[in-house]
Image (cartoon, rainbow, N blue to C red):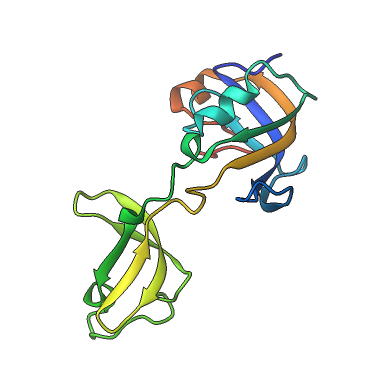
Length: 173
């Protein structure tokens, strides 16, 4: 069975970021295994379009090795997504700053003025503002995926109607 729309796909992969200067080194970002694969509903999972298109037509046991440019992945790094938020927004009712939460490098859930949920990384804390980076952590990076297809199966009607995988490796209701 080949990978196409409405199929449940299980893959084991390694994700690396190639060196920016064109060197041969790469930084490992994420890895799944045969014992703990990445399982998704092809065509319905909201994944990077190029990730899915590079897997189209493959079958169980097929290997893959492909690159996705930053612009086709999580986009270029956008300086406009660096935002200074008044320190008061992070203070509790007692007027104190939660220093456990608001630390450089911490990822914090936020809500914008339109009610959209965002994740931001604390970059700097001053006595007046918290500088947050709302770029995706992989923005500005080309991605290199290597791995193999563990399994491909038909999705159930329930999985198709819900838009996600159920059971092992998927969502449990």
